[in-house]
Image 1 (cartoon, rainbow, N blue to C red):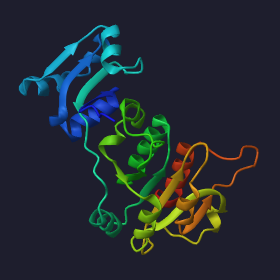
Image 2 (cartoon, rainbow, N blue to C red):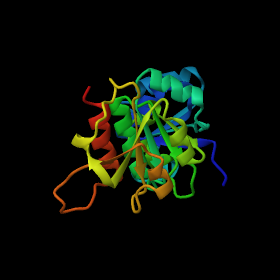
Image 3 (cartoon, helix red, strand yellow):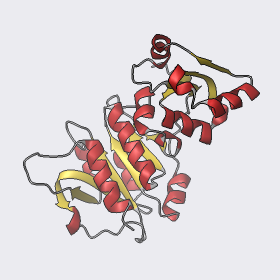
Length: 249
C-alpha cells in the first residue's frame, strides 16, 4: 500500500503541538480568517524559513484538510516514519518506569487517536501495535482526535504480537484487558513502584484480544461494571486502565 509522505494536521491544539515539538516538519500552513488571528507566531516562523502560509476560504480549507472537522487551521507536515520497536528502547522505557500500551487490531482511527491522547496525558511514552490489516494506523483523524498527543507518544509497529509480549516479560508485566479477567482491585500488581512497570494490552473493538495474544499476557484485567452493558469502548477502557496503572502513583 502506498503511503503519502505528508499528512495534514488539523485543529489548533494539534497544530500548536507540532510547532512546539517539530517545527521543521511543517511545510505549509492554511487557516480561515477567524483562526488566522491566533496563528501569528506560526506565520512569523514560517516567514523566516520562507515556507508557505495562507488564509483560505472555508471550502478550500476543507479540501486541504480532507475533512470538515479541521478546526479552522491545517498544517501540512512530514509524516513520521514508524520503525519497529527495538529491545533497547523497551529496556530504556522499563528502566525509567514508564508504562506501555500494546494494541491488537484496534481498527477505528478515532479510537487510536483517543488512546494516544490518554497516553500523552498519563505520560505513557509509546503505543505499540501489531502489524495487521485490521489495525488502524495514524492518519489525519488520529492526529485531530489526539489533540496534540501524537507529538508526545510514539506509535510504533511490531511483528508477531504474542512473541513480542513474551519477549518483554523481563522488563514489563503484561496485562491484557479481557472479559475473562480478574477485577482490577483483585490484581496483585503495583505499577510504577514495581520492579517491572505495566504494559497494557488492548484488543479489537468487536472481538477483543486474539486468543494467542491473550495467552501471551501474564495477567488478565477486567473493569467491573453493573453488568447492564458488557464492556466499554476500547478507548474508554484504555483511559480507565491507564489511570489505574499509570495515573495514581
